[in-house]
Structures are given as structure tokens and as C-alpha cells.
Image 1 (tube, one colour):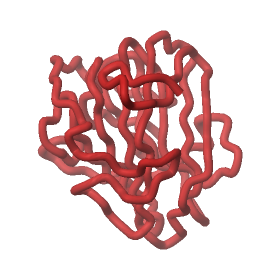
Image 2 (image 1 turned 30 degrees about the horizontal axis):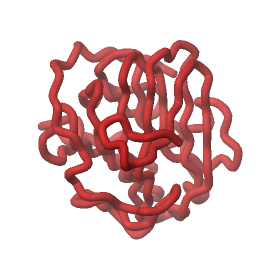
Image 3 (image 1 turned 90 degrees about the vertical axis):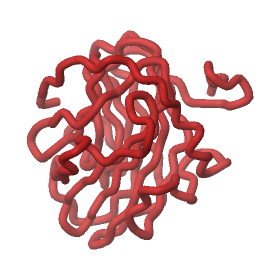
Image 4 (image 1 turned 180 degrees about the vertical axis):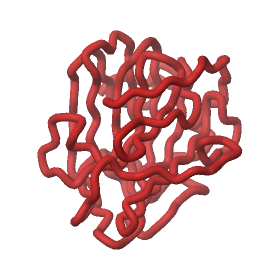
Length: 207
């Protein structure tokens, strides 16, 4: 835990360097139900990272991920859609950005919202098209782990805060109320920064 660079009174989790990874148990989104994973992230440089939900008890590689988002050393926020990533939006530098991953654990589908950085208001991604995405792999059980893994080349500083889960359905208007890390749980929407750098052109990859 370190001090938030934009708010010294707040403590956040830091990850720097290629190959770093972490997971922890979270309130379970049961098979056949829909739940929401909420978190905030901030990058101060170039990062290659993935984070989201899984049903694997001790995940240690990308193939263990199920419903998740990704960045590959650029300004593009990607969402995994079955066998590949799809560009879904912008991941701004030097701004706290909020993400809601709404996981339909009956249909194995994902809906993603974001606020902060390029998004002044909460926005369903991709902006203007509102797509759903498929889990990387079908799940026959509960999504009960939060999994975060950096790629081989990730030199920038990556910060994570306010991880929380709502197991009762789609929560898209405010952060879920059940903390998945240390309390306090949900924070006000004002904690999603509104700084807006110019996005780069999206690309796809298959990590």
C-alpha cells in the first residue's frame, strides 16, 4: 500500500514491473446470476496489464481469466471478447478512471462502463455502440476471484483502489457497496477524475 499521488490521505495498491500478478477471493457472482465488479485504476506511464473476474481458485496466467479488461502499453482500454481483445475505449494517463464490469454469469457475457479520464460522465463502452462481450471461456460455477496480471513489458506505475462487488445484479449508477478489498467500500463518483488526454488509435491482440 502506498499514498495516492493525487490524494495523500488515501492509500492504494501499487504494481510496477513485468510479470507482476495478484489475486484474491471476492464475494461470489453465482452461476446463473449477474453481478458487478467495480474498481478504480491510475497509470503514470506505459503499462501492459489485465484485470477482472475468474472462477479459478489460484489463477496464474491469462488463460485463467474470464471477464476482464486490458491495456497494452497505449491509451486503449480493451475488453476480452471470447478468443481476442476488442478496443472498447480510452485508458487515460495520470487520471483515476473508474470501471464497472457487469458479468452475466448465465449467458457468459460482459458489459463494461467507465468514468474518468476521457469520460466526464459514466459511459457504457464502446461509447455510442454499447456492445456486450463474451467471457474468454465458458464458466460453470461462481466468479469468485479478482485477478490482476501484468505482461512481460510493463514499466509504468499502476495503481488500484476501491475494488468492490455487487452480487445482486447490474450496478451502473454508483459503485457497488460490498468491498472486495479493505474498507471503506464504495467511494463517491467524484473520485473518478475527468482529465482527458487525446486517445491513440486502437489495436487488437490475443493475450
